[in-house]
Length: 147
Image (cartoon, rainbow, N blue to C red; front, side, top):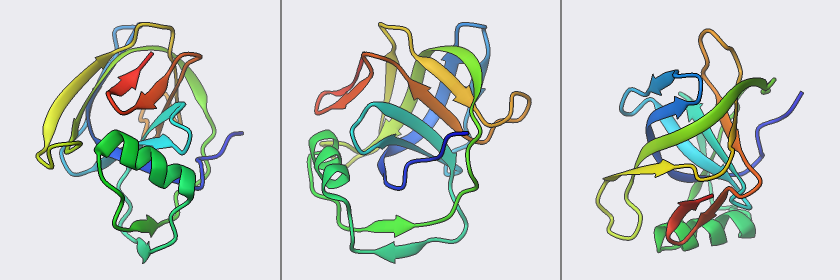
């Protein structure tokens, strides 16, 4: 069993994920978060929780990654509970499309096509609600997602 990182860096909102098996998931606007772990080596898609509590405590690594990716310091953070994640391998991720307001402050669509093998795991193969993407070369940087 694996767990969802305690601190995630919000990158934007997912639009679509495509896999090597031909599966494509599309995400309803306003229903999911597109995020990274604090080091920028994992991508996560999680449902937006109904309950969340504002906090001013932001881990330094997460704040630095957000600043590098978005171009400004995070104003605040939220705490919320999501059930544990039991990853089920689901092949390789070919691409991820997402909306982000990085650098401009306006919501813009981006598509990242992975250049290197990027594994995708889900919480349920038939009806996933949590996705994790990992790869040896995956990295969230100031220019966006690389790898």
